[in-house]
Amino acid sequence: MDSGKSSLSLANAKMNAAESLRAQGRFKEAEPCYLTALRICEKELGPDDRMVGEISIRLGNLLVNVGRYEESLKVLNRALQIYRNSDGQRSTNVGRVIFRIGDALLWQGRPEEALVKLEDALSILKETVGERHYRVGDVLTDKGICFRRLGLLADARAVNEEALEIFRKECGDDSHNVANILGNLGNIFSDLRMYAEARANHEEALGIHRRVHGERHPSVANSFMNIARILHEQGQQLEEACKMHQKALKIRRRALGDEHIDCAECLMHLGNDHGLLGNHDEAMSSYLQALAIYTRLLGNDNERSAYVHHKIAMQAAVSGDVEGALQHAQDSVGIYVRLSLTGTEDGVLAAGLLKRLEGGDAGPA
Image (cartoon, rainbow, N blue to C red):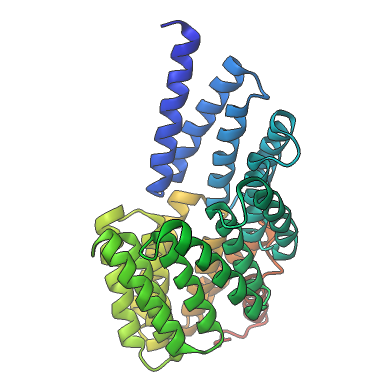
């Protein structure tokens, strides 16, 4: 085997390893694998090769996972230029990349800008793969999240129902995609305080995930998380919500390992449950475990850690640890500032808490 073929085989192996690590939530380990694959392909195939574009898309997605949105946008825009040069202005790959750019903007907290990109991607993909293709369903799913973040719940419901139709036809009624959309619709109904409808959607999603994946799959845990959210928001079944989160945590730890980012999410929500139940020690323990996982996997500056620092600050203030509360509030706001997320709802709440603590008010918000 000549050196070029050998190098490209290594690049392919690194790409597969990166995909596997990313699926496990091992983002820090996945990134150097993507970068190695990218460097090899640039050297062997040239910087404008379509394979370079494909790796760039996947690296861009990873950077969204770890909250490095500006870096993600830079990588994705590079992929966009490659595919525009190789495939034309309105190809499927161009639509794919524009969709991912919209996704990055959405999770950066820029839903209005994300919607512009998603509309562009939707137009291209409808032309190239057809109006009822699963890729169109994927874009509609993100549009629904944008609308929900903007408080446009009727629009969010409509596009999710459109995506649901596509996924039922393309993937079947008992499919992972259908279950995910049902979960999204359940969350919208929760926002609308239509808890019976929300519970019905989440229960249907749970049934599909159990039939498709079995009892111990992370998607089953996701449904438990969504049902727990309903119980939490109703405020009358917090103990039951706590049990649901503990079930989800048990499944995720068994399936994904203790150090997975999804386990940190469970711990974070358990902290919220315990906080409302007045179990301050348990709340603080859950938050600190979540923060440790987020920091190890995502680094210090990520949106999830900013949220948890804020929650720890609130618990510390309630327990009378003013110094600890102030430190965690400063950490939270500092991350939101560095990520340019001060205008988000959570960023505003964190800044408000810090202002109160600096003013000597250590009481609850």
